[in-house]
Image (cartoon, rainbow, N blue to C red; front, side, top):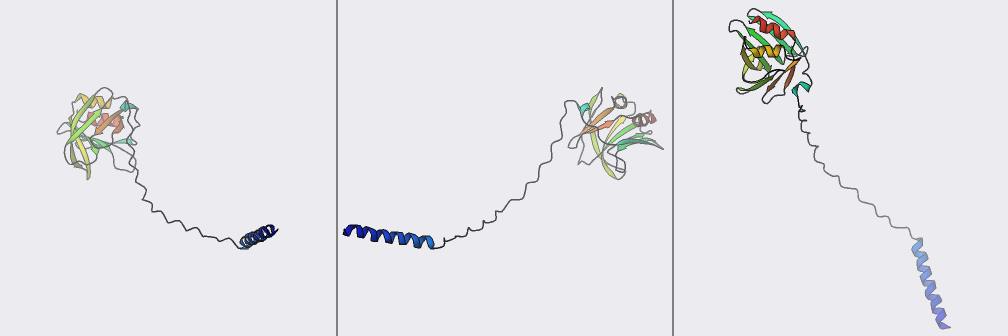
Length: 184
């Protein structure tokens, strides 16, 4: 019977250890605060590419209106939004018998300017000029040029595409015809 006493003694020690272990408070180990993650600055989004159209006549029109005024040497038609500098203007020079088409912008040298109408499409050489205190690309045409007629009677609009600049889709209103007729 000695054996059962040892088991009882050992059992009682084991039970006592479990009781003592159960009475002690659990040790709480604090979770370390997360280190702040250094975030790289958000990248600047690239400008959205200009939408492409199968037919330039489907592109949205450049906002603005035409205005006309008579000058001593011919007429001047200007196109742009009210209160802002014009983006396109056409001027007759009766003495030189030319109509010059100006497109607002700057360039270091001559560059190609494509003008599209309903019936014609031509590439001209545009020259940088200072016109009326502002930079422009100028394309001069003889007043008798049939291409000016193509601009005037184009199906409601014509396009000016200048290398390195956004294309312009301009309405062909009567002010254009007045400038052309001033030079003929």
